[in-house]
Length: 151
Ligand code: ADP
Image 1 (tube, rainbow, N blue to C red):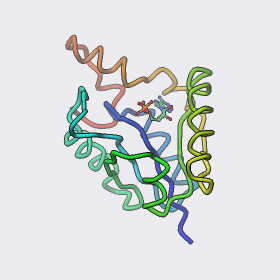
Image 2: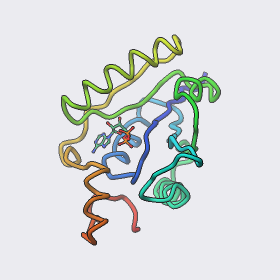
Image 3: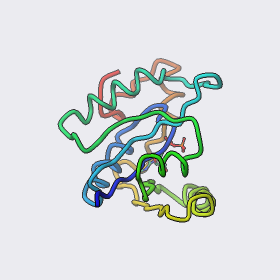
């Protein structure tokens, strides 16, 4: 049976840190679905979701095992619908750990078949953070070194 992992997040924007987790995830899973949590009615995104889908698809065009979807429901339910038993997440520091620990426990309660798998960030990407990128971009700073595509 195919091992399908969901990589959920807001990806506002998708960064080189995310790219690294997805590519390393492919060593463990047959397929990785990048799942952008997005609710059209309630969205307050900085980068439009359509732009981000296009950029992510372009980034991984040589990898048919990687796809992008949006979802507006519980991650645990989205995983079940897509035949996925694995949630892929990245860990940069203890703040990520505290948050991820709680989320993983709750996801397990909601969907007992779901296993969360954590990859420790590669050191060169440890400081890359979507909210800092938004802040730099807002004030016209150059964020290109932190993104795997051209904006
Ligand atoms: P959220 O908004 O739900 O935190 P993000 O889109 O920021 O989601 O991130 C999704 C996942 O990617 C999370 O598991 C997060 O810890 C991980 N991540 C974000 N940036 C990095 C990075 N630079 N290196 C490794 N993992 C990262």
